[in-house]
Image (cartoon, rainbow, N blue to C red; front, side, top):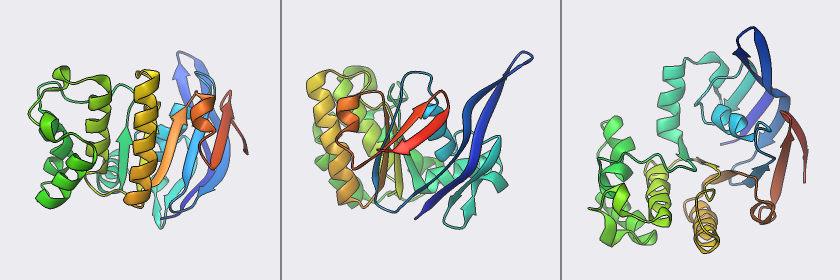
Length: 222
């Protein structure tokens, strides 16, 4: 599913001051691409990811997924589209502490009243080496295990796009390498377009395409 971003910008109000978090930008993402979005803290990269995921709505411009235009949809409609087509992985994992690892993974299916494909779930859990952690609560898991649970949850709906916001920001060097290998491998295995926000230049160098952001301005692809 091709993604077309046209004249998209995002502003916020802080009292009487209008802050331009993302200045007008234009680019396209082709099906199956693996892309890093990089920039310093506060540069606007997470804002862009939130817009692409329908977590926030752009102030101006349009984001199209095929024939679907976020700018013409309500927030609830964007949320429904994301649940169906987009997987999101956050730096802080965003797992519900009162749910087991298994319950966190299948949560998107429960929210949509979808049937659980046990064969697919089992394959996903085994691939991510989580089989013996399914009854554990998030607080009983290591950071790397929590991120793998978050990745399984993001892939449970077989999305066409996987968005990751600093997915290794809270992990040590060894675990960071392991998680990045999983992201690349799972993107290829499940034919998912991968978009990773990172401030780590070493991670960004591993991608075939890198988009830079500075002070809300998109630079050219590297």
